[in-house]
Amino acid sequence: FLAWTVAVYDFILFGTLLPRVKEDFGWSSSHALLISTFVSIGTAVVVLGVGPVVDRLGRRKGMMITVGGTALSSAATAASGGALSLVAAKSVGGMGLSEQAVNATYLNEIYAVSESDAVRKHRGFLYSFVQTGWPLGALLAAGFVALMGSIVGPDNWRLVFLVATLPALVIAFVCARLKESPQFDLQDRIRRLRKA
Image (cartoon, rainbow, N blue to C red; front, side):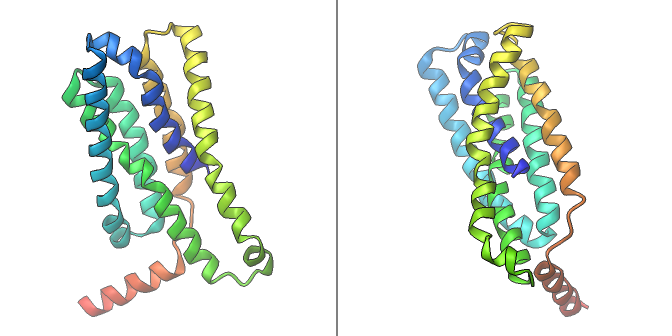
């Protein structure tokens, strides 16, 4: 839930701050929309690349990498110097958006071996709880922009992105404490045995 919330938060933050970014770089509205389109294309490419990495490294590490990618995206956005660096920085945010697929895989594998009737009975609620990260992340992004705008001024979008790295880094470290799914551990052991 928290990992998905911070991933959505970073994604929505870009759309919310795009008018400020546009003004800072002196872009026309059509140029800003073109940059946003390139960001979407780059994000899609990154999202597609994360699945094979997670199949290789594991679900726990996958969550750490995807949420860490969100932090990296926010930090790199704060440091961007123009259109190309901004597109590259926000494309890395695709790692965060692919977190949903990673956590769904992780939850499916954990639930498949759960012996708890309560977990099996309330699986739909638990998935819906995770999905509430999307509206919560969007609300937090909007609220954070308003709060930071009143504190540091509405034109300091770089600082807003820089501060946004902190929650993602915290969640990435929390994900490090998760246990790997038993199915991935078994698949990994079989793969190593075959290789040996």
